[in-house]
Image (cartoon, rainbow, N blue to C red; front, side, top):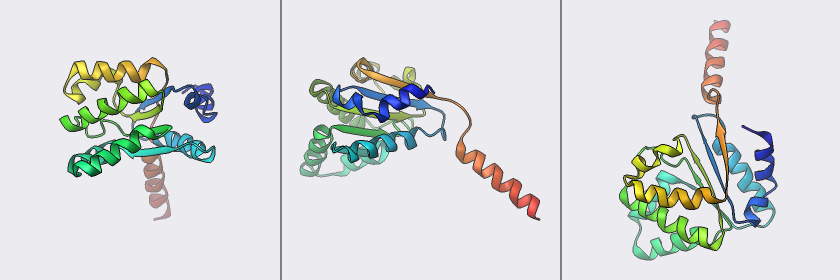
Amino acid sequence: MPRGACFELHALKFITEGANASLIGKPGTCKSHIAKAVAYQAILQGYDVRYTEADAEFARYTLATSLEQAKLMKGWLAADLWVLDDLFLARRIADVGAEVLQAIVHPRYQLRRSIITTSDRVVQDWGKYLGDATMATTILDRLMHRCTMLEFEGKSYRLKEAAARIIATQESS
């Protein structure tokens, strides 16, 4: 991952420009950690930030009353920065979730309000996870137009920590 791109996000210039960020890569490579750090910095600078875990938030929306759905949608649209973490973690999202994603991305693009997405899934496969290639193209078109794309590689820090614990346990026995 290029260090300059991380600094660029941390400086928050992308929010004032109405740009997006997409953090894509293997599990355990700190995508969510960086997204949360950028969101925290934005909050400290006075920005209105919404952080959501994609699967849980789309499920919450699906189960909500129409009044609650309208309130959720209003919050997602109004925020200066919306962090959508772990997009496609469960692979395919429900049709309602895909429709909600499109309903949020399009107006946020027009309003020039920033989105950070994190995902373990490569962008080329988003069509099959959304269940609709045209919808995926529409969403990606708006997300990627003004976007800093960071690709994360390497080994999972969680697996590395687990391996270190196993070795420490074996050495102490």
